[in-house]
Image 1: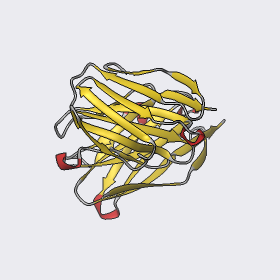
Image 2: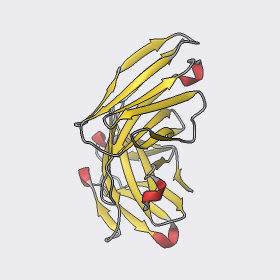
Image 3: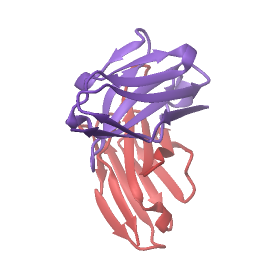
Image 4: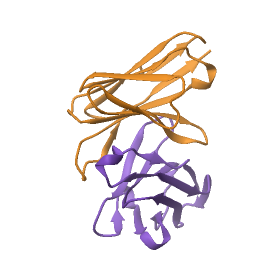
Length: 116
Length: 113
């Protein structure tokens, strides 16, 4: 079984401030981890993903995330927020196993507001 | 996204009527998934398919059925639509193999009145 918990349904930051969106997961086998962004009335866009190898993953738009197995976490960060980062962000996990049929489980999302 | 299309994009239907949503892919991917998105719940898996005629239930499958008679099409049917099925529905595809990612469709906004 697998699950995702996103801490904070709403995060508000000032423009130029650090963005930190928290994600904790549970998985019975090594996980694949993802962050998606969704702008209003749009579909999902992949920000970054972790499969294997380097635990610090860099994505688009200056975002990065670090896989910490000991903490079962995959927090998303960006050093300096831009107004254009305002959106909803989803963390997701799938099991590193074909037997799981690679089902993707999502967290409930974090709405990021960027204040001028 | 390229390679996956959902139809219709918007639909309003009446309570009690059957509704079918279509997901079409041109990638020849093995895995296909239907999700629904509701405020405060994220995306929840309804049904998925791991091959032609091979489907299984997700976490919120009650009131829904699916069919996959060919690789490229995955149909989601609401047998008798209810207001609780008002939602945005997303289809996703994934190839077989450890390094494939997921591609999501643009979504179908369904309103049941």
